[in-house]
Length: 323
Image (cartoon, rainbow, N blue to C red; front, side, top):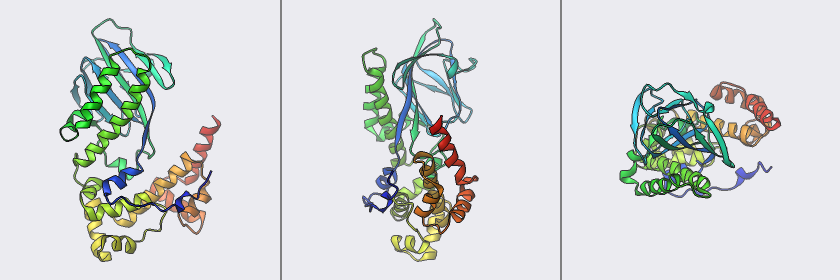
C-alpha cells in the first residue's frame, strides 16, 4: 500500500463548496425492500453508518432522533447522517420491534427483502445503511442536522424530484435488478440531499455553513480539508485569506466557532483515524506523515482529540481483518 500519495499536489477548484465536498463520499453497504402490513413499527438502533429511508407506498410515521413524531408521505426520502436511533411506524404508539427480528431474506449481494407477515394495509419502504468515508464525529458531519428530509430541500434542487420519481418507479415494480438500481439511486439521492442542504444553508447558520457562505474563510477551510497532512500554521492560513494573523484568527473563530489551531488539529486527527482504521496504517507512519517528530508526541495530540490512544483504532482495525 502506497502511503506517499499525500505528496500529490491538490488543486483547489476556486469554489469552497466544491472543494470541501470533494473528499466526502458515501457508499451503501446494505439495503432492504420492506413490505410491512399494519400495524407495524420498526426500531432502528444507533449505528456508525448513516441511515436512509424512502417511502414507496402508503405513508408512515417517524419517531425522530429528537424524540418527536413526524408524518411521512409517499415519495418522501430521509437521511439520518450519524445513524441515530429512530423508529418508523404505521402509527404513533405501535410497540416497536427491532429491525433484526423481522423476516429478512437475501435477494442478491447487499440487498434484502424485509417483511412482518401481517395482512393489514401494506406500506412499502426502501431502507439502507450508508458509510461515509468520514466518521460521525468528524467536523463536517458534526455540523449536519440529525435528520435531513428530501421534500424540505426540493424547492431549490429540482434534481431531487427526478431521483424520487425514479426510485418510486423502481420500488413499486418487482423487476429483475430493481434492488441494485434502487441502491445506486439511493447513493446519488443521499449525496444530492447533502449538497442541497449545504447550498441552501439549512439549519444553524454557524460553523461549516457560515464558512461556505464566506468566500475568504471557506477558501481556508477547503485548503485544510484538501491537505490535512500539511503543516498549517496560523500565519500561513492568514496569508491565504489576505489578513493579519490576529484579524484572521478572530474572523475564523467567529465563523467556525473555534480557533484555527484547534480546527486544524481536529481535522488532522480525524484523518489519522481514517488512516489507522480504513487503511491499516501503522501509528509511526501516521505520525511521520503528519510531521510529528515522534510517535509519542503524535499519540498525545491524538488522545487529546479522540480521548483514546491511536493504538486503540489500529488494534481494532487489525481485529476486524482477522474476524
